[in-house]
Image 1 (cartoon, protein in one colour):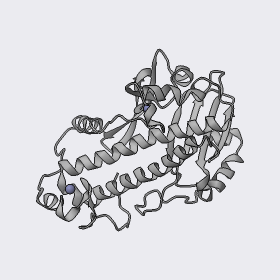
Image 2 (cartoon, rainbow, N blue to C red):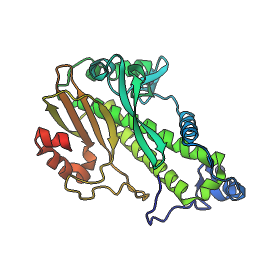
Image 3 (cartoon, protein in one colour):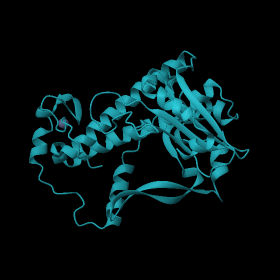
Image 4 (cartoon, helix red, strand yellow):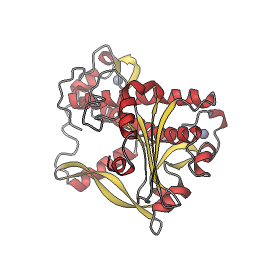
Length: 313
Ligand SMILES: [Zn+2]
Ligand SMILES: [Zn+2]
């Protein structure tokens, strides 16, 4: 990501907490190390293959295991590679001979891009976000039953989308922090500081939303979301489970300035698209009610679209 905007805040201030250790001030912690580091670009002269290998290794080393379930005392069993999409109900519908395709980030001659790669069903769309017990128990209402539009099902679909993304955001933050440790001079580089700022606010935003889901779950109150559901009369050959802040509405007006490093929270929408066993496709899009000021008009216009136009969007 190369940032070329005019944001200030692209240097780490002397008295702000050091990225490596939030209890210490930057000036008294890594600042001198950053100034003294004279190392050049990490992959100078490397082939693209080697650069991709290096990035994959680097990113792989940021993976971590956690359980995002709300009742931690119940956690049991190993943190498995949990599927962000239901294994039986979704992956079986879209896989062919046990394989499917996924998007994989890769650096090519023209820069970073996504390429489509074949992957085994059991490795697809997985992340270390739930213990064995919660992966099964928490999601039973959507794993074992057809979608009926109930608020608990909407809640669980949205929550899983949040968990998948939260795991990625935490990894991205770890990734930047590791870069700072390995190459301290990057702490003085506006582009890396920008990556750091974005990663920190992404994690904070997701944590805020996570806490709201937790509150709702613990109170047995699943009404904190607004969800649009559409069923397409054809089975798509892909599935998606993700949460993100929407930058433009369907008329191209800016809703969220997603490239900003300002402290304002970027509210997420939660998206699930998957083919059903009866040959149709479910589309679920939700936002938290507290974000209705940001998203209610957007959802109103999405809701007004017929199935075909919604599919296009
Ligand atoms: Zn430090
Ligand atoms: Zn657990």
